[in-house]
Length: 299
View 1 (cartoon, rainbow, N blue to C red):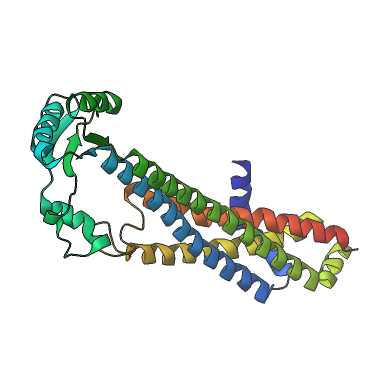
View 2: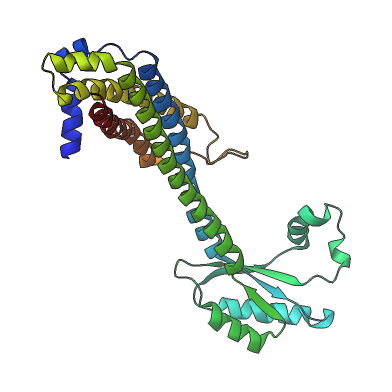
């Protein structure tokens, strides 16, 4: 909180400090451009992180509510075992519905690998029974034991082996998004520090004159810190606004396409608004550190 108050007071500024320190030229504009570019990238990294989180949640919920039972039996026993499996599922707590999959549905599942002309009816494929779980879910181990006793050719697949890698991958992608935001902030701090060092070095003679007439280092540093902090805040605000506008035009979740669902939802849109103040905070401390370090070296 104290740091935030200091930044607010600094942005209000002391007009005299801005008058005695010469314009910083391209270094201040470089700070503004760097802050805008980094904020633009940070918004997309944030959108990627939130989208990965929503994707992991959606995959987990979708796969957790469905399961399949695969029935492998001789032709003469297939129908009997299918009836036995359906009876077991009908009396199993947590099963909302169960139905055998048709040949057309099985053909659609195999089409990505074998093409649309696969003669499913001539192949010795297992019979698939699709079940939907209730919100309470199914005790998978107990159901496997019942199936083993009443339909030996039936195998339950609750999609655990598919769900866990997908959710883990989405969680890692979310972590990479937040790591990218941290790296972007570090890169912005480094660029602003270099720009401040350059501006202070270019005004070394002016700093010496100011000291001769009684100006303190805190007064001189405050002028540079204020200038670079304001530039960073302005650049980050512009970059954030442009990035949010670009994200708003990405395909939504209901659209078809590779980037569908990438973006913010609901209250997520408030998070990018924190980037400009955060950029100003980073610029404040980076410039302050650089200013006092350079001033100590100027005699």
